[in-house]
Amino acid sequence: MADELLALSLTETAAAIKGGKISSEEVTSACLIRADALGGKLNCIAGLNADAALAAAKATDSKISKGNDLGPLAGVPLAHKDMFYRQGRISGCGSKIRADFIPDQTASVLSRLDAAGALDIARLNMVEFALGVTGHNEITGPVRNPWNMDHITGGSSSGSGASVAAGLVKGALGSDTGGSIRFPAACCGVVGLKPTYGRVSRFGAMPLSYSLDTIGPLTRTVTDNALMFKIIAGFDAGDPTTSGLSVTDPLKTLEDGTEGLRLGVPENYFWDGADAEIRAMLEETVDTYRRLGAQITSVSVPGSIDITNALTSLITSCEGAALHGHWMRERPEDYGRQTLGRLTMGALTPAANYIQALALRDRILSQFMDAAFSTTDALLTPVMMGPVPTIASSDLAGNPGFADFITAMGHCTRPMNYLGLPGLSVPSGFSDNGLPTSFQLIGRPFDEATLYRAARAYERETGCTDKTPAL
Amino acid sequence: MNDDALKATKEWMKRFQGLSPDADGLDDLAQAAEKVGGRLRGLSGAEPFGGQPSPFTKILESYAQKNKKNG
Image (tube, rainbow over all chains, first blue to last red; front, side, top):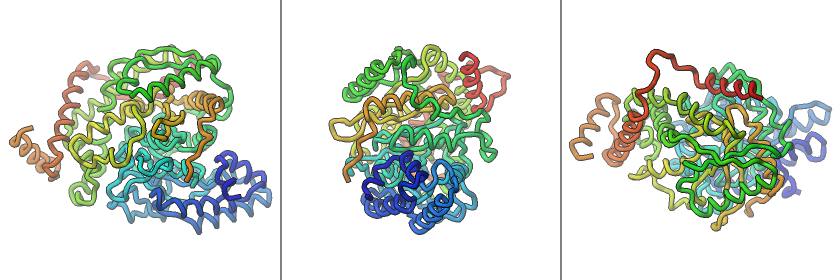
C-alpha cells in the first residue's frame, strides 16, 4: 500500500484524499517513512516536521470527513527549500551563518500553499545561500542524485529536486536566480518552472538578488507543476515587484495540445557547446513536437544574448555582496569558499558597472523579444550542455576556474533570469550514463500557460515523467 | 595579474569594502570582474541620456499587454 501511495502524483494524491479513497494521514506517514529511510542517504532533508505533519494530516482528514472543502491541495505532503521562512521555525538557508535563524514572518508562497490545504513536512537542503548551480555545499555536504548517488543533483534547489524525484514528497518549492530550479529539475528528472520575474511573490523568502530572484515549483509531472504554480502566482502587497496582471489559469489549456503552436528552435547561442548526446536528444524532441502538429521555426537570437550570462552573474554577485557585506566582514570563515568567492566578486565590481548591467536589460530584452517571439509562441533550448556530471568531477569549491565552470553551466539558464522570461525544464529521457536529460521551454512574459500546454503535450506523447528512480 | 596589481587590489578591497579576501583565488575573481566590465563598456554608451529607468516588472507587463492586444 505504501508503494502505491508514494507512486501517486501530487494531483492524484489531492484527488484521492478529497474523494475519500485515501487519507492524508496514510500518505503523509508513507512520505515520512520514506524521508526517514532515504533522507540521510540523499542528504536532502534539513529538518523533518514529522509530529506536526502527522497532526496536521489527522486534522485535515477529520475536517474532510465532516464535508469541509479545505482547498485544492488538502492534506498533500510537500516540503520546500530551506529558505522559505515560516514564523517560529528555523530557516538555515544551507549555511552556518543562518543555521539557527528563526524568522518572525511566514513567506507568502508558504501562506498560499497553507491556504490551499497543503502540508509542509520538511525543510530541504540547498546550496549555501542559494549561490551555486551544482548542488555542492561545503557546510552541509552535497545532496545526492536519486538516479545515481555519485552524481550531482544540480543546485541551488538541490534538496527540492532530489526529494521530489525520490518520492519523499509530492512537490517542492525552489528559487531560481540563474538556473537554481531548472538545474535540479533537469539533473533529477522532474519538472521545474522558473516563472516570469514578478509573477510569484518573494516576500518572506531569503533574498539573493532582488533583480533576478524568482520562486517556482518542482514536481514529478507537468500537471502537478501547473497546479502549484497557479496557487502561488499573483500579486502580493508584501513584494512590490509582483505584477498586478491577472494570472492565466494554466490548467484550463493544459490538455489543448500543440497543433499549430509555433515553436522556435534557436539556430545560434543556445546550442553552442552542447555535446552530441544532448544535441541528439533535442533533435528527437523537436521531431516529437513536429509529429504533434507544432510548427517548428528556426530562430536567430540577437548577439547581445551572449553577454546576459555574465551580466546575471555580475548582478547576483553585486546584490549578494550588498546583502552579505556585514557577514563577509565579520564572519568570512563561516562561508564556503565558492560562496565567499562569488560574493567577493560582487565587492570587486564597480557600482557603475552594476547599474549599467541593469540599465541594459530593457534594450537587450527588446532585441530578444523582436527576434525570438515575433514569429513563435515559445522557444525550445537545452537546459544543460552535457550529461549530469559526478559530484567528484564538478567539485571545484573556490579553486581558480570555478567562475568559468559556473558560466558554462549557466549558458542556457541565466539569460532567462536577466531577461525575466519564464523557463520550464521538462524531462526528456536518459543519457548514456543513466542520468536524466531535459529540455527548456522559454516563453513570453507572463505566458507560463503556453509552456505548460507544450510540456504536457510532450509528456502525454512520450511518458517522459513516468519513470522513477529505483531506490 | 602581477604581484603589485594583486597587492593593490587587496588594499583597495580593505580600504573601500572593509574586506580582506585571501590572495588565493582573488586573481581569478578580479580577472573575471575585469573581463565582464570590459564587455559592458563595449555594449553601453548608447543609453538614452535623460530617460528614467522603468521598474522591470512594468517592462515585462508591457510585453504581455502587447501580446494580448495582438491576440
